[in-house]
Image (cartoon, rainbow, N blue to C red):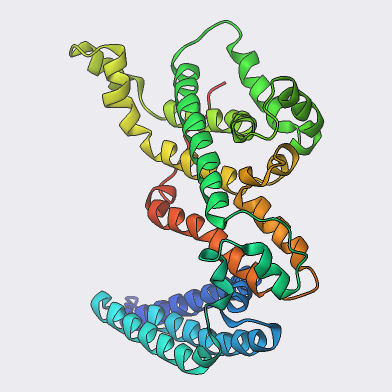
Length: 352
């Protein structure tokens, strides 16, 4: 008596797998959307306050915006799950985005305006704050603070990237006496909270006559960022095989040429990542700016926004929100331009 072998219904198995995959993906999208709401809603509130004025109009714009965006996110998730053809998927996403923008413009357009951004072209911000209920502190032009922030973030970024790249390469490629102790020292430096160093740093800056100077803040922020940046760059250099560099020198390249032409292109992603994170660290720096800067000609955007919030406390937050929106624009632009490299970042193992 021979056993009868039955082959499985592969079409049914494939159908069940597709259903299971879509259910899993749908659950993932739901979790991601719900998990992102606590992060997205405050930024959405900031935008709606900045472009709609006082709290009454802001509430209307906020809820109407959520009422449009939430269904659009659900439809987008369904499109991503249900449509397999990439070209058709992109076309549907473009159509959904256009419809969403049109509906948003229709339901929120009458409440939107740009009056809260008048600080961009009105240099006499003190009179503006008096008219809005503030105390009228002596404010410089917002573009002075913007330029100071760019200078602070840009210069300390160059210092950190250059120093950490050279130090990371040296720690990765050379074995010298005290190397292990140096690495442990870098770890110990990262263990101290920056707030605990305010008094000694203030005294040091006072003794070297760098109080009320952007140069002093640049040196302080760069020094605090260097230990972690060195560890990151050392990890990237560790991931570059030594044979590549040796092959270049065997072919006649000097050590310097091998470093610049062969090794550095391999760690480009790490350098970009360190540059982005250190720039943002300098751009958002407040503690040491507040401690070391006194004159309003040296204000940065963080200090400018702090004093504006202090003056506008209990009154109209519209202009403060507009300033906050203006403050985060460089960060958004930087992340947008560098996100391709940041998502590729993979730090190699750090050798002791």
